[in-house]
Image (tube, rainbow, N blue to C red; front, side):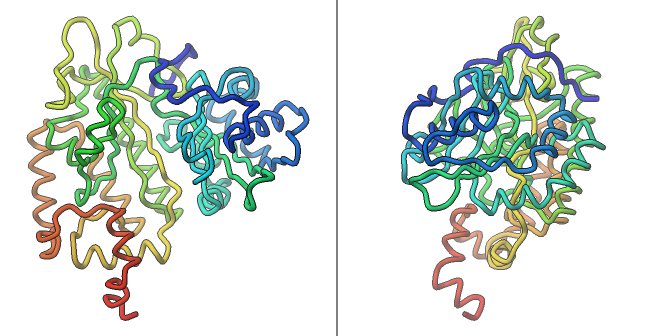
Length: 387
């Protein structure tokens, strides 16, 4: 079994955002207060109501994932909550994240389509995580539908586990999909420093790797790889794509290494695992990596089919958007090679980039998902598909 252990406080660097004033009037504050009231049984704020979806089924999932009701309720109700995305929460958009102060849980505002996907797969998800306790799929703990007087539509809040909620501050994050086209962080993204999220080509061509520092660590990584094989196959069976492997590298002392936390999956890697992104770790400290699959509720619908058709034909055969089975196979093929020596992983990736590039892709260069969406909505796309 992958190591999941005790319950001490996580690093303050891994509980981002500012403490929410629950007496405030922002969407985030009112929604968080209402969710707390739905848990404690207290009165809701004026003209606010909450629907708790599948209360019993989510309680069963929490038990399966090792979260007691007392622990879950206390985390959400008995400590500060922290907001990320304050500008959006203030009114222009409803997209924001609320982290519990202990760093174990994240409440994410989602659109109705994403909430509907979770509700659609929930019975199968419960059965899958019960049968596969070492899964690296996101930990879905609850779903709330919050009605606020200033919003015409309900605000959907999904409670998940925090993949990076460890005791050590994360030095570098990577979001890996297994694709190559458009999978390099921009200068603007890199300028965020320690908060930046790098991508597949950054990992490969910076000489990064997940090589275990010991036989035990290597065995842990191989267990994680096999878990991700099952996970990606299950996601394909649910017609879901666009998920990523989230990695968070951190350093810790040898004493801290002996006391992992129960809500995150981590493993020790070689001190030079970050390649040219960071100086090698030396001395008595250890380099660890937190791992988990994120963002797995995107269905392969008509728009994704159009994105795949246009971009695959004209730009690259290795764009992120692929049919579910192909996406899963490519994802596993890539993550299973993350433990290779950097030179081998670079050679493997370079060959993929060369083989997949289309003539137009060589002209326009890197072309990411946002660019693809803009193209698909443009008049040019209508011409291409005969509209």
